[in-house]
Image (cartoon, rainbow, N blue to C red; front, side, top):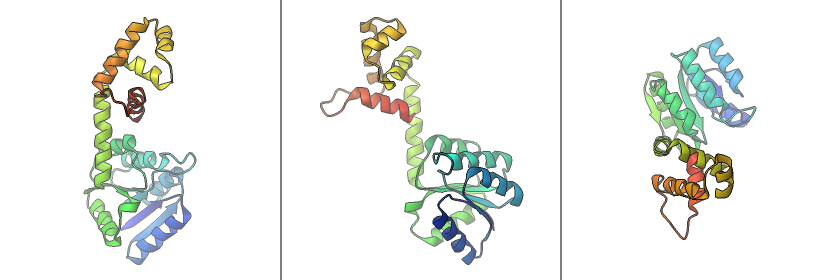
Length: 214
């Protein structure tokens, strides 16, 4: 099995390299950013790329975006996303492009080296290997998006302005609505998002969080 490792943390990258080579796997490249990952895959045509999500320059989602591009440009290369984080938007996109030969495991939940090696073998064989927590978070994000889809265009406008920190008065002035009309839209947003009145929760904040998470 020929493997490319993409991990910006040098100690972890070297540790994975030693682990895999000591177990009979061939590491053809070990790189620290998304551009180097794409170049290594194009050069070596590995069986699998093991990819972290957050890499330079912004340390947000470069690794996962690179993995998606690799799947499109090199569909025969398996991809194992191995990270501390679940990036739901791009994870769902990675799976939507074809889940065969794809895995997503969380570093802190892999307790046994044999499980990790088995995951690599399964991905190389064209199977899908997903941590249950990854599945849970992707499904949760999907449900949030579906819920927002029930909002009318006007309600989405109002919610977007709520996310900017605008008061109802400010929203009314910006959208040329009456204050009462804005209040009605806000109430409908709460109803459609399932946010009931509560002494412990701030519904306006919760609605904005739903919007931002989706």
